[in-house]
Length: 482
Image (tube, rainbow, N blue to C red; front, top):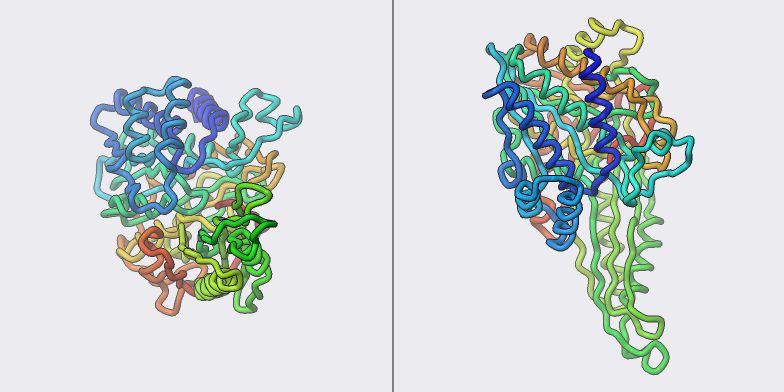
């Protein structure tokens, strides 16, 4: 890798890190991605085709989409930091997904590679031993790239710059996806046709508590999840003068919270339940007439996740009945388990070994988290294509989603070189068909079509589906993705 490319890769990663933005509010980030792609297109006329806004995602397919006021505030901040006001206006109105298509100079497969661009609502450490703080690129906005997405975005842009020479077989589609955190961005892009014609899909993730430079052909044990919200509606009354006339929505939500956290686990798979937010009430002397909670269920077995969500719905209904209030609960997002294709895993491992030797290369590593890249992978597989989820170790000194999380920037050129080689060399695989898979899916060998549903379609959506058998997994578990 040239010094100029290495310097640009690090500079971009640090720029994105300094300006971390929350899901569907990645206005400055998307504007910067578009500016970088425009520069690439100017240097290689006709090589790169870009779609963005409503051409790259469907905002109306998203539950709990940020309000117009929230999007305007993010847009104003982006303009204040130098983003083009016209570009920002469209991103605010239509969404922050960006798609770049590059066609090679000879026949070959149609690739898609996902790069997530969003950050987390975490206040980043200001300790002088935290590298971003020490080097002056810590984010001070109460948001943080604590999951490596800054590195992913930088790698995706340098990959576009490299492949703009069109010296590869087939085509590549780079998906700069918003809102991986919370698992809402992938379906919004699927609804806009982002995967039309794609034959091979890859996701990339840095970190996972793996040593820097470790290359993993596929993550396994990725968890299905359903995110949900519950809105309780009661009756306000004076807390002392007439409590019998009230119906306490906050008490119902609090009861539901403790009951959700006490749901029994299953021996059929790993399970997790969390209530992440709980809001309600307006004053100490008023019976709360409204409360809202948000939570999630997860399992590495799709059928277990579905049953856990059904149990959560019963808890919410029972808590509302106990306090005589109404409740409306609905799924806000979901993702499925992952079943990577062995043929594609074999190929990416062969390519990694050819450049880096066998020592840093592993077939699998556990990823005990959820990522809606699983929905993108399943969509490609349903059309007869092949999918996998690559990991590149980055020696993170603290776990993902931690205020001291960071990545070793030496992992960035490794990820970039590996992806470049895959696209330039990966032409020998069958163009369709899935004879086998790493990390088994259901009995048919493929995820259930209902996994890729619009989470906003129904106020009480069903859970997912894709029962997953025990994976062949090595490597340390870490909450790498969402």
